[in-house]
Image (cartoon, rainbow, N blue to C red; front, side, top):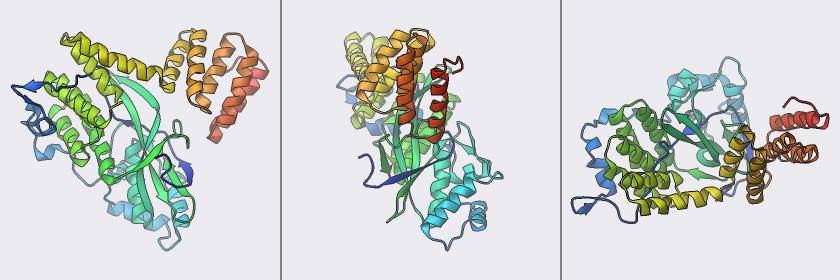
Length: 393
C-alpha cells in the first residue's frame, strides 16, 4: 500500500536518518542450525541465548517514547491555540518547531524519546518524529507514524556498515489534505512508498536504534536487551532480527547468529542484509554451496535494484569511469522514472565524457523531475552553467 488512501501534502523540516542495520556479512540455509538435536527457535534466541544471562530489566531504555513533559505542555500552551481548528493547530505547531529561532533542532545519531528530543533539541528522524507525534496528539490531532521506503543510504562506522531507514509522521486532516511531516528533506519524495505503522512498530524502530547504538559502543548486554525489546514490541520487525544476528556473531555465537538471520528472512524474504550476512557466515564455516546460493540471490536483487545501480554509478563517476556510470544509470532509469538524482548524475556523467548536448538534456529532465523547490533552484543553476559551458558544478 503506497498512500493509505490519503491525498498527501508534504511538510519537510530538517535532514535526519534512522540507523537500522549493521555488519555487511552473512546468509543461510533452509534448515536452522541446531544446538544438540533441537532447532533454535525465536524464543531460544530471545530468552535462552547466552547473551540473555546477564540482562536485567534496567538494561532496557526506560520511559514512554510519547510522554509529553511539563515543559512540552507549557511550550504548546504558549505557542498553539488549543481551541483552534485542526489546520490552525497544525500550522502553529510546525511554525513553533521550525519557524522560531529560539527553538533550533539539530541532527545527531542518537535516538531519543519525545521528551528527550524536546529537552536536548537534538536527535535523528525517529527522535524528531516521536516529538512531533506526541505534541500533535496532545493537541488533539490525529497523527500516525509512517515507514518510508527511501533509496538505500549506507555509511560506515569502523568495521560496521549502517543501512539507514526512515520514519515520518502523517497527520490525518479528515476532510482536507493529509499532511506528511518529514524530517529528511534530502531523501524524501512523494514517490517513495510509505505505510502507516502502529505505535508498537514505531517502538520497535526506537529500541532497535538504541540497540544498534549500544552495540557500536561495545555494550553487549544493553544492546541485547534493547534489540530483544524491539522484537517484543513487534516480532515481525526484520531489521532487529538481523541486528541480533550481528550481535551474536560479534560475540562468537554463530549458531544463534544464523538462527537470527533466518528469523529475519521469515518476515522479509528479500532482506539483503540477512542474506549477505548468512552467505558470509557460511563462507567462514566452509559451506560454500550455501554461501554461493545466498550470494547469488543478493547479487541478483542488487542488479535489479535501481538504487544499487545508482550507488555503483556514483562510485564509477568518482573514479572517473564515466561510461560505467552512464551504463548503470541508464539501467536504473529504465526501472524507475522521474528520479531527479538519477537524471542529475547522468547529466554530469555525460558532461565529463564530453557530450554537452546530452548533459544539458538530462539536466533539464532533472530540473523537471525535482520535487523540492530547493532542488529545482539547484538544477536550474547547474543547467545555466552547462548551457554557458561554465566550469562550476
